[in-house]
Amino acid sequence: MRYVAPTSVDEARSLLVDNPGSRVFAGATDLIPQIRAGRPQPSVMVDLKRIDRLTSVSHRDGGWAIGAATPTAALTANPEFATMFPGLSEASGLIGSDQIQNRSSWGGNVANASPAADSVPALVANDAQVVIASAGGTRTAAVDEIITGPGQTSLGDGEFIIEFTLADMAAGTSDAYLRIIPRTEMDIAVVGAGVRLTMDGPTVAAAKIVLGAVAPTAIRVGEAEAALVGNTLDEATLAEAAEAASAACNPINDKRGTIEYRRQVAGVLTKRCLLIAADRAQNGTA
Image (cartoon, rainbow, N blue to C red; front, side):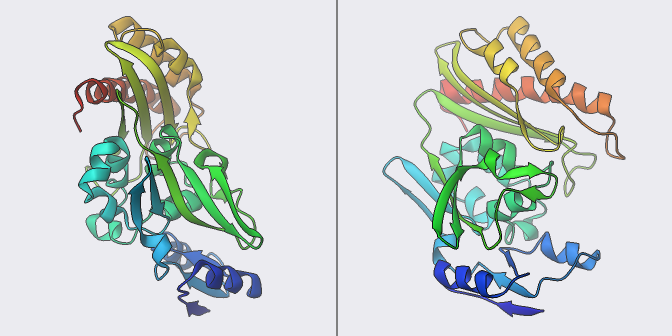
């Protein structure tokens, strides 16, 4: 197995084309444990952290460009980003430990395609797009178009994520992310919930609700969103949204939680996230 560290997107693209069986990585916080667990070793490991575009964060013209290999620690420590996207910042800060967050990245979190990935529900709720390098140039897709199943993506041979793009939050809009884990830290979500709300006074003008760890991929809960729009967040509306979130789940039984438990928790986290996002949207608090 050979290690290379290209310094440009074109160089990385050429390496992948010329070396079938190669793998890109940003932090290797998933790749190395997978190899140690017995997965086949790639012929070439291509380190993306030497490419400036993949580790940069820029905000201009009403939008953000976040390099796919940017350490999540750099995002949680960015006050402008955390103020604009408090929920997405919180989700980024839940990936592993402090040490891991100096290596982990959105690109790795998405490309690893774990149903329990913390950043994915928050990215989908915020309409994040990904710019993808391929042999023919680049293409753009929504985050929810990339992950197709556990450990599976729509990325083709030789393709890798260059950056994520996000539009600024509109006035009266904010987000929230919550998860539940068996331990206090350093664990994988049993359920994760990402919410983005636009409020018109006390009334919900727009809503996105995305759940993680309750299906093979993160799922958007359209029925819960429909129950919210045009209504205030009174107990009846919150209960209807929570019930819809629970009903949308298609979870598994495992040692971290039962199907029944995950469905119940999905509704509870949805309700809590809605209240947090609404408060932030109305009061401008992070």
